Length: 382
Image (tube, rainbow, N blue to C red; front, side, top):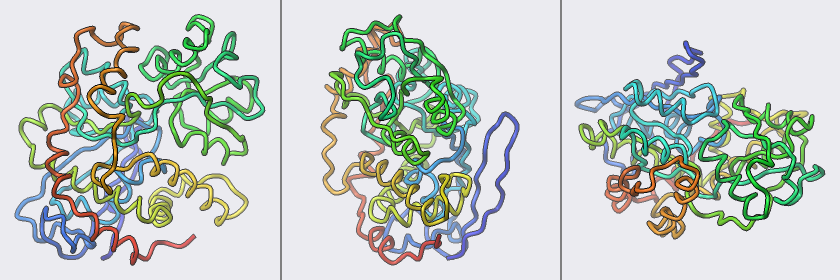
């Protein structure tokens, strides 16, 4: 298979685009052993899917659900023409608002933001969870904050003030006796490099983030760790794939094929995180961590991908236990949002989540052909 980059450019509104064209021959939507050379050549028709990531750029954290399925033709072999765009800011509300306009069919925002958004407007539903280690507070190893109780009078970096993500971190502090009005929230939505610099320069004392953020800070020369808190870390998964209700209602078959491509991408990245990292760096060299040489940069990038994939096993790989995404756990996870007035008191799981199509796809999904591809695939060298 040969893969060429058709076009990639910065568009109006700060969106960053990725479109790939795969060559070769492959049937449509089978998800079988020959899914190693994706192509739309034998498709009777090709369905367009516009896909937005709530991020400043397409980063290493999205390898399983963006770069790998696109580069290896997993979308193409499902007869899909997928355009991936980053929203330009690490602000989920922007991505969800773009989906409300009809510009995008699917997207990856924070789960908390999706719950809040769906409580106001029945526009999107979660159809897949992209990561499972919950939101947490990250601090420099040598910084002034070493426990949630230390947050009193300190500054906490957030992607946006008052969001569900920030509410989760404030709940962590509250359980250790620190009220929300004792913490100054500082919005930073221009990427993790900017966050790391803010921590280093002491513009903020902590960061409200996700699993791989601490690795990224350490890679940037700022050894960091996640605070141990009393707050249940396994309530709402932090990342989710959402689809518009229009797509769910009018194009469920297209969405099922999209989900199958994502399962393939996750399976490949779990089986060969080093090769997934090489693919991501090939497509987006600007996501390469700063280092003295390419080998060291690759090592740092791989650490980020491994941390993310460790917390991102999709259903059925293999017999993954997702106990903390049970209905009971998800309902508990919404409670802090209700208490803060961000979600309606009577919001139900069905109002913001629909995993029925994922369940249909996952029960018939066989990871073995993709694992074999991961074993034999010749990745770009660094």
